[in-house]
Image (cartoon, rainbow, N blue to C red; front, side):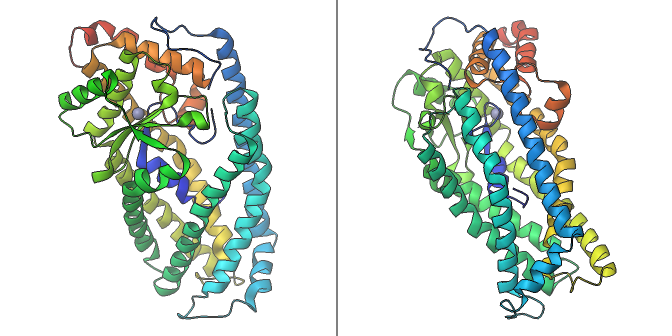
Length: 424
Ligand SMILES: [Zn+2]
């Protein structure tokens, strides 16, 4: 998707997962009942993992290339202006000087539809064909389509409202629109991060409170040890979509909770699950969700400020634009934001990997059980087809969690210290 995607933005800001986040697109491995013994790395599945990662990277590159091509054609092929002129007669209504909401909405919807249709074969291949080929998806084609329609129904009205709001600001206050946009996004992010676990996640998954038992007892003991209040520990029916395992901390304030996939609860030993819970508690103790929201807001403000500079420079020198609030500036805004996001990607991913490493350290200190961590990570790599040792460049650019290899190496190198209860 070539536009600023609120849904992705929100997901990144409001949840911290245990493993690299592949939630909507992946799935599990062959039947593998809970094994009390320590997990061993499956070499055959590692070979598959490498292949799968390579294919997804190529797919992302092609996708990016097509988005760039569409924007370039709109920008330099004159199509952006032609579209505005074609829609001009129906979109003249101007409730505020310079703000033509009907024209802005139609323009946005045409671009959205074009990018959606062009992206469809890639969404289908990357989201349905590949996960099925590797045995990671448990979704039927109908269920996959239903999820896509739900995602679209959630994000489209949202993005449309955001675009209308931004173009209203561009018409009203061309110097400080970027600041108000950034602040409005902060408010919306906080609100949605709070509502995500009670309103958004249940649209895709069923959440059930963890039943009383050993797992819950150990989780509550770890929470007491962390001196953090757990507002709820839930199991999520990930198995309805995927064979992959994951867990996360999600929500803000009174909705904050720990969510564990049934694909993890069903197949991992109690010691391994205890480590996963401790890792998630680490995120709560370190206040990682509020911190991430702050980091995202700051980077968004910088991005919008750069867009502001680009907009003023280009609109000032190209007479075909009828001012900043002209919807024909949309491809320009998308291009500037896209380039900025691409440059920022390795920076935000580095920060995310740091946060994840800190949560691992917390989990190791809290459980004093490096063996359980090593075994859980190994099981996860086998099950989720995670590449244990990706190329350092790919890890630097694209991974929001340290590679499994790095996480294992850290635990092995410091195992004695953690077992003895020393702090890092
Ligand atoms: Zn984490």
